[in-house]
Image (cartoon, rainbow, N blue to C red; front, side, top):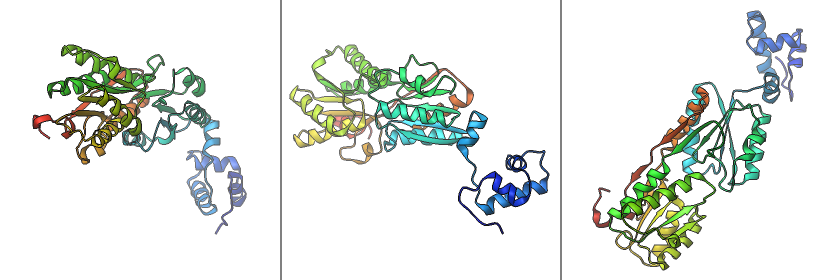
Length: 337
């Protein structure tokens, strides 16, 4: 029986067995140049001595690893956790492990994550950029030129490589059109941050739906820089003051804040005011009133991002957004709940 010690090395195993370190290394790598009995002896000794392979050193020697980095703004958001789950299901089956980094919407944290993944010699990176990124110039500089990059959800169009996006303009158009068909006429929008292309596209879809219905586009009821509950609440109070009777929200958390404001003001939803969000977070279907929302198919988006990496693609895939009509916009029970 071999004794377990801290930081056991290949040299320790070689000394215990009376063989060379290179033989131990080849045996642990499964090289056919090593006799079967030697390989079994090395594996047994490594296990009993508590040997663990130094992944970083191994990656440095090989110049690559079987690790794919996934960088997301917020891990606890259901949307991003589902994307991670979808990507991981595909990557694990292909023999890759996943290393997840969270930026918390900080460009500085994003740069740090990219450099860390580069130093680990990851095989590739799947990235949804931080909301406060003005442009993507820092991304390739931090990651280096040789590591494959797949962008998803929040993408910079000018960065080469595969992009997995939602049909944001079309989805916002359909959500706004639904509010118009429900009978709402002064429809504002909680639009999100214009530093992210997906919010620019959602604003464009909202504007197109109004124009196609012959309704005026009023800049004063477009509320920017809101993707969380607290700012959604404040934006909704302003929308109420401006005489709005509905809001298309570019995110579900801002829609939740809007419901808070409407409840506080005693305004009936959906009889007097309609709300539609985006992302189809799980809370939208279980609260009262339940919130109508655009579903983004995040698990599918994660799978597509992983396949794009595995296939070495550089194309753009656009995933449809599905409108789920619930109580918050189902005026006069016109639609099936």
